[in-house]
Image (cartoon, rainbow, N blue to C red; front, side):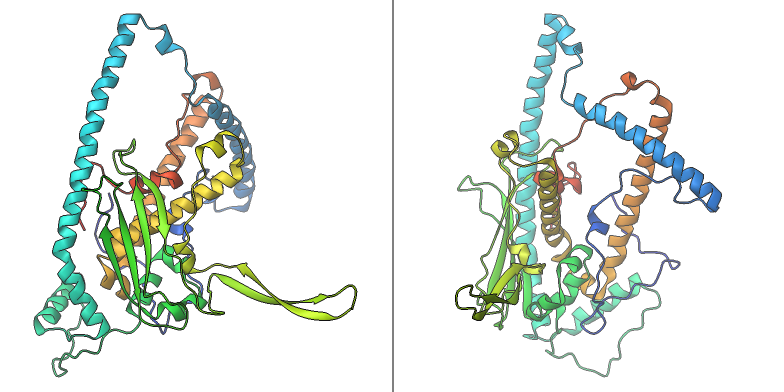
Length: 425
């Protein structure tokens, strides 16, 4: 669990992107989601000779490690024969433990369902605050003196050098231009998705809301919906673009809900305004008449609005039949993981703490989370290197390393949740 302690003064200064100073090239989403798996032992060497020697050694070790891991991968899921060799009375005890585990799983399912109901309860309590926030952002209402004073106390507590604003200016219903565009751009993952072309449309984004699916009465699967509210614009006809995330009915092996699928709104683009496509004009020549004509062709392009056309998980049948090769499957899983992570961050971070993303304050905590992950990765890498050096001569003694379910097909939701804590909005 990451610590909510501000970055110390020796950290590099972070300036929040605003509509005036947002850089064109944002940090890639990989900074927040991907993790290195094989360390390069030559990375931190200071001398050229040592670098060359270490790089050569690293290459040999990595090759041998790859061979070992390749053999171990073939053992995953295969029995060692130990369980089969147990006496029948012991096997009955093992089955009994599985029966006990079934009851534990039922309680865990009940626990997570009650946590979800608690999230719904507190979202209802926060809804008036979200409405008040939207009124100030849109300029529908002026902030009160009490709200401003509470905000200044919050700023002063966070920064001892904070200078309170002058008191000779009365609060007014002036709103905050491009609030949500700036807030979204201050999230590492979303910044990578938002292109310069998207910015024109996202300037019309007036609110981002969350609601929960009504599964209590209908028995439907649980989940949540993100609603992006837009003012009238020249890009599309929709007033609201929605993205729904559906959970599986039972919690996963990690003890938390597992994503089942995501459903996006069909965007009704106005003519020649589809930001998810690029248009190019090509000349075509008629073979018989030799006359030429101009043909306009569209091709897919990167855009934030692809978020509303989520990737579709492959069917188990397609995987079993080998209709999808490993590279394609890995690519799909990465896209699914990314999509689920963005949805989870919008739900858990951006919507509840939108002002911190607008000011850039949230960047400090997000970067600290990434640094914590980097330290964990380094520890894991060192452990793997040590295990490799000690046990490489005896591959038969190495325990099989089991992998969890692909993150893109459900693991992403559970990766940042402590199953022993009940999160609220």
